Length: 389
Image (cartoon, rainbow, N blue to C red; front, side):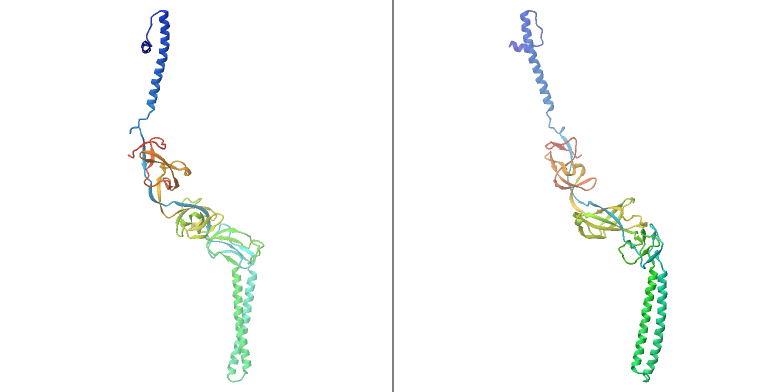
């Protein structure tokens, strides 16, 4: 009992005396140790008590929640390709010979029927003159044979000439008439060749290449010894985007599908529709080709430019969620759901729709309660309270 009294009075004063002093020192030593331990225990108990969470409504983590929604979505199909003119032609000589004059240069815009170049005409003009002279001779011979035939026709009824002579004269008249027809055809051919020495534009377009200059002999047949063309012309007022989509998108492509074309240097998108859809798939690139023509005013878009197309594919029903609710990267996406006021983390498979929405491919159903935002960081198993006010 005296020991417990000393313990309780560890801070008291003591009287002088050797025995009393020794006893006091001993008691003070024991009392100090006991007092220190008692203070230490009290502090640890205070710390533990402060760290224990008080699970009351006031200090639970507050979350805002949403439900996934079923919605019709149409994700744009984005593909790339190259601009091409409606048609491109390398124009060569129709009448072979030395190119005497080239009327156009690269960059010129030409109209259908406008002269492009001319080969030397003197030889072909001479052939026209020869054909005319030959026709004149044939016509004279035919007229003479026809006159003789008419005479024999009158005499045969009077038995003044033999039937054999009559038949012979009639045949010669028919041959002479045929000769006239032949010479007329030869004249027309010579005149056409002469006309063909001037080569004209087959359609409205632009000159995009000039291969030779004046003085070069051009053949009207492919020789295999060099370029057989003089100029190149492209119909640029009608152009098309030649585009390639992954074969996985074949089901989303159809004739008449609308979209926009984006070309460098042109600020506004070009509205176009699919006019040609290739039935074949490139076995190496695994792509399908389609073409979207458009009116190219003033040939503003050039053949060979790169083009990007965005097509609105047919709408489909999908589970949609706010992008804000999805955490992680596209490959490791996850969301926090609430079940009985407890956080449950779920992995999800997603696909982008737009800047605000994400399509949920798997991992959620529309009845799930998904955390949109929270007052602090969340962990799996954490208790929360919902407040959507």
